[in-house]
Image 1 (cartoon, helix red, strand yellow):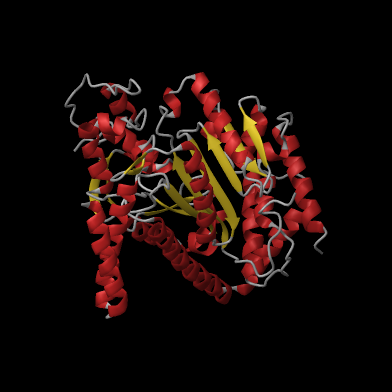
Image 2 (image 1 turned 120 degrees about the vertical axis):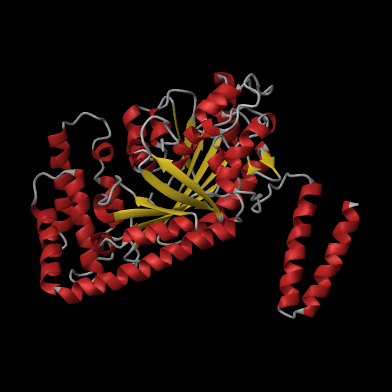
Length: 339
Length: 155
């Protein structure tokens, strides 16, 4: 089955990679997962399994405490489950749709963590779908809700709508210019956080950033989505302006940089995750500025997950060098046929 | 000034956090600031929780058995009923996070009729003032009728 990220539509946004909606929900009748008995956890998983099996529009795969650790690690690297959930040992389950756009974790920090993923800027569409699934689950399971505090959650920071809306952006020009700091400070005043997606600090791998709301109490779902979207749109304008400036300043240097990235990706025999991410970032920048020919079927976001260690080596049997070799092989196959 | 998180090192990192228009000043040492920067802010709020007054050290949530000591250590509650059981203890944390904000988002479909009616009433009142400001008098009249009806049902 095609995954939601496996093909990039022609004319896809050069900066926005993906959008994500996450809802946290708990049942009124049970203690939160940390204080549940094994029987209660088993029972809850069974009740949710029944709900999910009634969602006929899509087929879901269940992963649980019997799933091999490396499979769970790969799901965590693909952001379909949380690292905490992958590493836990209690009774729990994750239901993931065939195209990986919907994931429902049971007995994570909260009873339910529903996540929807999609390409480009699509928060409104994703929320509309999350809202429908939430209505269905809520109708069967009866969620803990308080008029003043909203949906009740394990951590008080998730109260209110229990909603986190995130957008993943590729911001190489802004990162290079040092302009992100000021934007990040201004966004924080609106309750919006900007952080590196892979690794923290001033230079996150692949220049990928995540924009998300910090709180969801006191704002409606629509207002949260709008605020995140406003910050994203501001970042898009700034990034495009700076990219054009980079091009004007020294097109030759930029062209050399992106073609070098192409050269390495299509020829190298060993490659670390960090290097691959940096080079894929350059390729994406090059395509957006027409320095490289646009390849409509080059799914860069899909590639980003395919080069992750546990995705490359789902059995967990390779040495780091073998993984670097497998990664280089995969990338070479993708890039050398593009000539 | 000492770091408000660990209480051991000198605070060298000062920032103001604004959530829903409610500003809070924070003062952290380099280590705690790095920790805050490297993880979800919620972890830090957990440790901020220690600042809440320990009104009832021995208090326990009857529903899940969570004690106040556990709550102040983790900053996270044990069950939905904890929000009622520890309402007083949680208030400073909630104030710091949200000011006086109330939930204005979705109401679950199975919430009580009363609650849904009250929510619709406050929405209708807001829509009414918008309609008047926009001089949409027909819409305003319809909303006024709806508000009257909802008020009567709430009596």
